[in-house]
Length: 488
Ligand code: ADP
Ligand code: G6P
Image 1 (cartoon, rainbow, N blue to C red):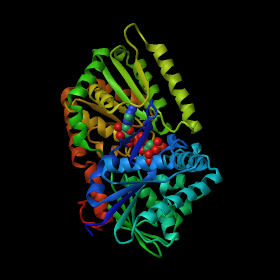
Image 2 (image 1 turned 90 degrees about the vertical axis):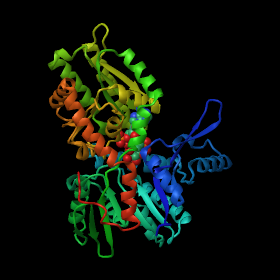
Image 3 (image 1 turned 135 degrees about the vertical axis):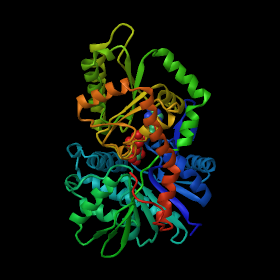
Image 4 (image 1 turned 180 degrees about the vertical axis):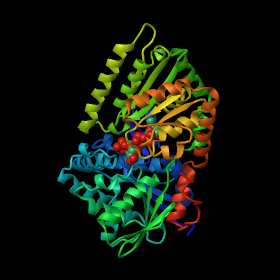
């Protein structure tokens, strides 16, 4: 069993390919925690990553050049990279369509934003079947454990079964699982639930997500029995037993803390500080996404300035927005709304020498991002709903002087773990968030440190490596006794 090879399957491959101005192709490892965490496991066990290379390459690379790039990528990462190619229709209907106009809003409790176009389902099925074929061709029943990630690929195990291909499989959902009264609206609800039950292990971020899933199974698939609680429960279908666990994802704590202490980050932090002196900086960092609650957050910030005039001239909100999914119409509308609100609030409150909101719309380098984490004393993270929210954990890991204050939405998965140290808020409650901003600004050093120490200890212990090990020990070794009880 120790020698089981790992095959990771996710919508995006673990590398980012880009074209330089001089036309040369460059290749970089993906920047997320998943890539960092799975790299060593894939190298040790021998493994591979299967995924899509992204739309910026569409039609740009011939086959030989692609082969060459992937060989280079595989050498650099230390494990094999297997691409799944998507045509234009597939990108539109599987990725932008079913994944991001149906599952994404529905699973984040925003059903009114769903576009239940039936054509999306057909292509979602087709692309999941395509991924399943690549998995089948590149794996072996005895040697490989197949770990599929996220909502874009729910049907992969079901397609493997339909093809008569037996594999040991696990699935992790990075986003929330909705309550029954939201999920039930999905025209393909039975297909999605039945497909999830084709995996041997299903992992969720929080106890609440797992409970929602179990409620849906109980109500919609009455022939399936749901048993157990704690970290690992079971679904007993008429044909099989499926393990269902809670595995809150995390970050490489040490790497964030060490890099935050590096000279390079300190120099950059100094530049930020020098340009925004003698003020408390409040940080918001999000992909441009309506689930992140950015407009309500801006309104809460304005409400704080209005109701607590002593804050004017003493606090600045740095709001970083990372471009995302630009082809989904909702995202373009949101961008305009944010820009309008930033303009309105700055127009209303700006005084000589003080602008209340610094708005940055672009991707930041790692050093810049960490410099903001270090310089800003308060993080304002208020998603309407979020699977976990890694930014919250990264901010804490980088608060190496223990002086940061985290204001966190109670609807982020991270709140289940960080409730002892964060100021929890309801992101829909504008006055409540404004009060939390006021409270954070006034919080004394002793309270800040006590709260931050608790959060940092918890994240350091439950880091990304702990997450990978917990999932794989359950999935591959069926080791169900490794967890004391659900801790958060
Ligand atoms: P989501 O996965 O929904 O985008 P998370 O907060 O869980 O939300 O993860 C976001 C990830 O993107 C974090 O790991 C963070 O470091 C990274 N990130 C956030 N902002 C930027 C930025 N401006 N530039 C580069 N990476 C960013
Ligand atoms: C969330 C999802 C991921 C997704 C990421 C970025 O974290 O859980 O599956 O990859 O957002 O979104 P994108 O659509 O650019 O891949």
